[in-house]
Image (cartoon, rainbow, N blue to C red):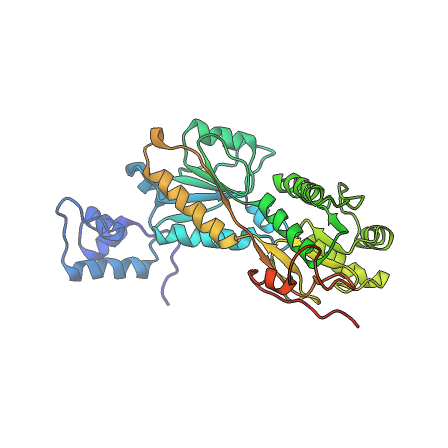
Length: 369
């Protein structure tokens, strides 16, 4: 019976098995054929086969000592990715990792102990950082100080960093415009819950909601500035008391709570009130009725963030400069929205179906007779 290994295989051990020098093994395993180095094909195969049999893995820390680049990117903010049900960052992170790996970068992440440290940077060298939504101010300060390339996805940056964000004001205008053209004039807004993290989208979506109603000379539904606590209580006030015919929810989590509680008050969606939300995430297209949403370009954000970071890494530190890129979000029409009862046409414009034909998906349910 073969003796079980209790130690990590080394370059020296592989060299001994193959009868070659340590330097030859190191160059072959690292693909370093510079400065005229060459090796016979049978020797190369022997080295790689022996490394595989012994379970050899390169020592990244040792490589970092002799190379200017580590070929490692760290993603910080994984508590955001996994800390909220079905958020936009899972696809974003997946696409960012895929893009970086396509360029031969390894990607890592850590769970920082902010009770002990005031920075979320990893304790090893990396070539760049991708921040998911937010990190501590001290982390931004540290990256700026050492001129470490970094990109923030959907969050604030420092002067030298870049950011990729969805265009929330334009998306909110699109949502209100869509509901208005359906014929809705009593549009309520359901804000974030107490569990939502503070984020600039909270202010931007709410402010734009008020601006768009004011521009159309519509009254807002009272309670729009409040934190969303309970779906039934919100519906009782907004729909039964304030006679709202449409609701724009801060995100899919809030919309799902409203959808869940509506039957307890015998409120039918969309017949009695239309419902739409931001974030086209898991469950939005399979609940009944399926939710009309404003979908963030999750994959596009991840890919673009990785590309921006790679460009920063290629530049000398003195040539790097920060930029913010805003991406368009997309209206996806499903069966949770329809005309208000009795409204065959929106006021002051032509045929509704013609005006809405440019949207991503058109599902306009038949009104009850």
